[in-house]
Image (cartoon, rainbow, N blue to C red; front, top):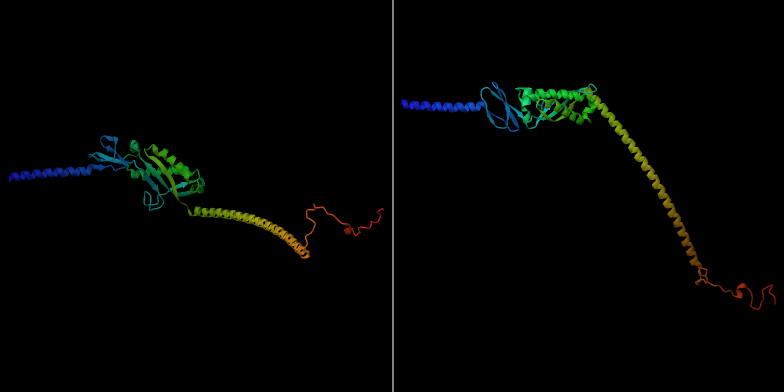
Length: 302
């Protein structure tokens, strides 16, 4: 009986050890997901100078794993409370050269290269990448956007110069954040949220542009109508000239036909001995001149 009790106690100890090992494994094993690299910080020895690719990493009581994204991340700072990094108004206020403070949505595409994870840890310490994105990257975006925005007036930044300003913002963020181990791929100035006063000015300017466009179109329409009138008048003159020429020709043809008809009515059925070309020889007898053959013309000598 005692023997069975010892065996049972032994089995319980073994099961307890196995359960303890699995509990320890579950508590101290961490996964580095795909698209991330990790570094381990040891409270006794400091940061390990080694980064870990996606895998399961088992830590001890004094170690902590920090992961950084090597895949592309999109940090969106939006005034829309339903989007962005925080579910609240989180847009970036930009002061332009005309002293207008206007809120813009800004998107930043970034990543942390594996060789830069130690630089990122040195710059931000034991801060998760989510907090780095919300706090530190946002601060850098705000500073860079203010510097870039001061080069443009509000209307330019809202319209034709936005792409150019986005490129400058990208270059500025790359310079600021590269020193902290973050690689910025692209920054984009997106939706604008103008104040009521600014919106009124925008509407006024847009209406002015529309009136200018309408005036320009009216001038073009008037010029087209003028050209059409000139062309119509020229076409009418040509038509009248062609009609007059056709009428004159028709009149000549009618006169010629009338003459031919009169000539036919006077014809006695005999062909004229005279040719129309005037090349034949004519012989006139004495009777034609009204003299007899035995008579002599007055003045003739015997």
